[in-house]
Length: 187
Length: 431
Image 1 (cartoon, each protein chain N blue to C red):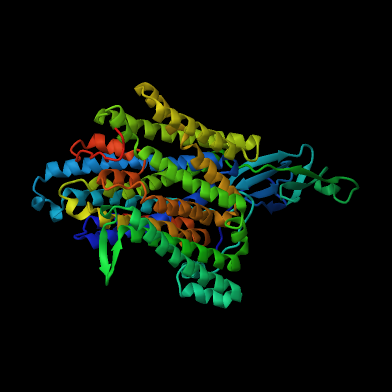
Image 2: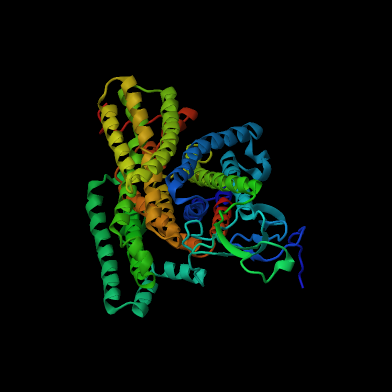
């Protein structure tokens, strides 16, 4: 069996439930609070003053309503009337501050890399035009009639094959399509 | 394929490598735009896409600087190419040099970029296609006869097959008619013969119109097949009047953008006797104002979208009206400063639509169709560009290349490389 320690807790934790983001809400009993832990760290906490935090469950249409079962009194009081209560509260999606910042920054990193790729895309397209006037390259690059043929073929393949290649990205895997394509045209 | 171009020894091998570059590059933007749709919220779409398209302005500038730098450095280090590593000439080194960063970037993408779940951010999870590669090959097949016929015979009704075959015949006839009509209009030097097939000579004119014919048939046939296999995609893209209007608009606007700026230096050098220095200025203005206009246009579009559902389209329309007005001023004035100011205004507003219209197209489709939506849009630009390509081309080789190359390149290239052959003035244009 693959055992892994998720988190160590003090006190007398009781019921728990999972949320959509991979976090766990735990009732901490006598500590009188429900906490949300994720990746070994406590990220959110809801106090239940004067009442033991017994069990919890997420529900509601969007899974954001936390149903909290709390109880007043001591263990010995179990069975007495009107001590338990279920309250609901809406929990907002919150991640650790650092992971939140990293997440925000990460997508800008993705954008930066994609801009760079588009730049390289354009450079590789333009480079022939820049090299063609060179006297030593002219016999190979600067042929008007055949140049037209290559340009036309380039536009035709770029445009028409763009549709199945777009389908490849949409249906298969965008990151893989991107780097394989980049490797192919750069190499 | 770019790196391999450096090892090409004859024209056919170089041509094949260039076509390889075209195929590879066609895969990049659909994937990138679909990814961005899952990393950034819908409400900032025009801003993000505008920033992405700024990459192309950077690319034009970088290609000039880096290309020139590699050539200069290589020629300085190895005056005799026989002494150079692998006996590479400077142009070969330049091909290899611009290919290398792509390989590094590919590794960076493969190792550091995560594939997000399509549609998760918008709350529209998408069903995964079970056999994606098969779907891709079916798409390619649906563009090429006889597979396109077989495909429709199997899946479609009798009518679909008949329409397809009739369409194919109509395209062949139209190409023949257009070729014979335009061949008469072009001077012989503008329809150079590339090869002869029996008594029939294949000219550049024939090649260009055939390519357009192939593209038109391929897309029409693909649309027919999509209509049967994925009616939702069909209805949201080609079946939607809004989407069709966007595709035509951006195709024509892209062509307009290129042609409007392709001859600005030529015009300036004739009317105001511009020299190389003014070329640098024109090129820098086009690049800086273009990038700025695209970025600001994205912000403005997203802001306007919050005010009104069609806000991005209104922003594009307003910007293009300004382009028209300032272009009229620019080409009517005899005053140099007015010319520059009008040119700057036109350059600034001429890129505003790029992110706005792309974002509008993306808003119209489901997350799983983002790549296709982009593909259809850029295809129209390619086909319209192909069609209009032969018209502005002149026997003057330099003009011809510029019209195909794009906006900022011409002035910048002239200024960086004063050794270029002097421009021959086409006699038909008044001085």
